[in-house]
Length: 462
Image 1 (cartoon, rainbow, N blue to C red):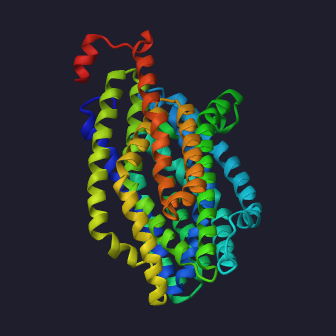
Image 2: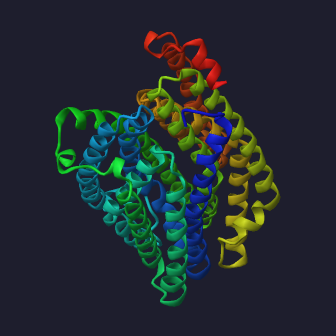
Image 3: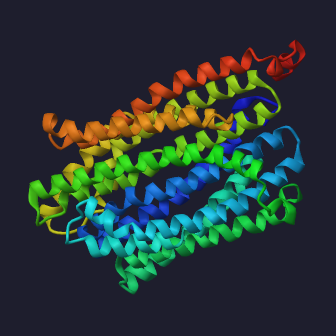
């Protein structure tokens, strides 16, 4: 990604990622739809209560995996292949240790978390079973995220796409078998997800095994304190950023559960409606995540090649693509959103009407504010790709503060809609940190003699 026009290069990476993320979100949505339609709104609410708690730990895994691959992209862009192998080897060892520890911590925290979230007794046993199965599989989740990240750092987004397609097909087939045929309920949905993730990990491993420049030696797998601290130093801020966002989300989920109790403690209509739209959250941000990963790889490789002017052009291209895409998705959701959300819900007409009203209010608000979310992903990824993980971490703290304060205070002012606005204000709070930080960081690089271009190089980039 260090030569040629940025637009086609970014699209070449982003579009396969987008399709791959569609497959990934497809099996998340299918989980919710099959469970909701077969098992009812209580089972759907049980899945929803697990979302942010799962993200708290899943975000830590993704954060470390993403941070570990930052120097890989830079080494690849600079054609330092010995360093590339070293980072791959160390990352494998660190990922194994990290994922096992996180799995143990997560499993021990399930029961206390259910108390903190004030999960309704109606759905608590289902939520506990579902989330425990997912937590036990964290080493598999880490394996996929790390291997997919290595491939993306080399500019290969096609292989993770195929891996996600395989996982999606497996997950949907097993969802139907485990939930609709065997009637294993939410634990059947969790088991289907874990098996699907294992399939995607195996596919990525087979692909990486054939690439000699990333094949580490035994020496590369041994812990070197300096290299390990560098990798952890890059991954820890992203992991913390994701974790603090997850904690904020759990505060929101607790507020949702509390509001449900105040509305009708014998029903889960508000929780189910919120969950239905929250399951679409991942679909709404698919393109944002994809443009973000492409931007991160683009910035990392060009920083390694010391081509700062290309980083600026790539960022502007990604931002424009993101805003246009967000507006298209907004229009689509306003036209087709009701039909999509309705597919998640089952039960009595009163339960469906109650949940649908809540779900559509949240969906239309979130969809209308999507450009704010897309700017967040693109600018955060640009900074992370250049090795600056501190400001993105601070943006995660800003998200947490805005989300938490909003969900605590706004319901007293505007009612339950305050829960919905908490998400939008969290995105805006992060943007206020990320956008100025990017321009200050890129300006500092531009005036650094080690990164200045000759006129000939700039003309070549143009």
